[in-house]
Length: 264
Image (cartoon, rainbow, N blue to C red; front, side, top):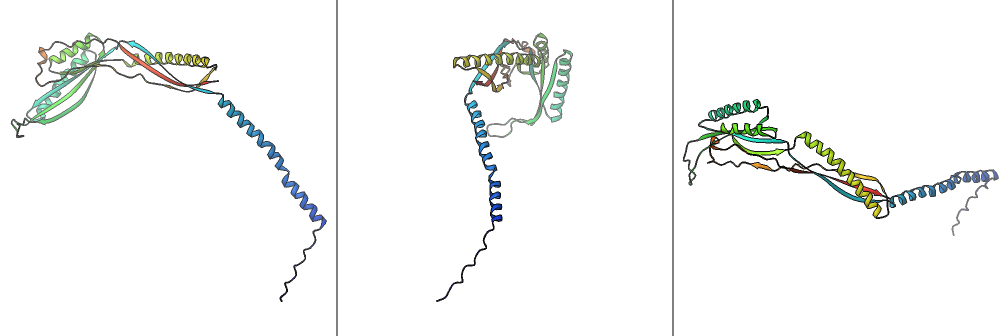
């Protein structure tokens, strides 16, 4: 039988080393009670915050303010058209007619803008798809005339119609200054009504209004009706037409606001 080697004897721990180990263990354990005391305090603060949040009711509201107003700007859109054997002839006729029209509009003190210059070729075809006429060129350009609503603009449009310009549409709008003034007025009214409604709702549920979490102010939509003049190939010559007649009437301008009210 084999014998195992005897375990080596461990040297006895001295009294001084034992005292040192005990002191070190107490030193590392000392901060633990302090941490244990701080944690309940922090937990209590968070609990109070959550309790305060639970005490708040969020109320969603919306209000609208509106005004009936008479538009103060009239805008006319006219078309200059020409047909020629070559692109140069068609475009030259359009350029000449537009230059004459601009002189009349500026002399009347009205704002003007030109847009939509186009040219293309045209040729009549039969039912079999074969050409039945010569190749010709069409050119056109749009003239926009804007001014204060009144007789001056209508008289100018009538003069342009006499010069063979085709009236495409005639519509009333709100000027920028009038729209801005209405927006400011409607915003103040809508917000005042929104707050009054929030306070009324808070009283109905035994709460008090405590301010807003969020407010959104909408925009005033531009929904002006347009009086359109449909174009037709066989329409009468401008000199045989009566001058256009336009009445602005009244338009309803609306502005909406939404809010999230805090109730306590």
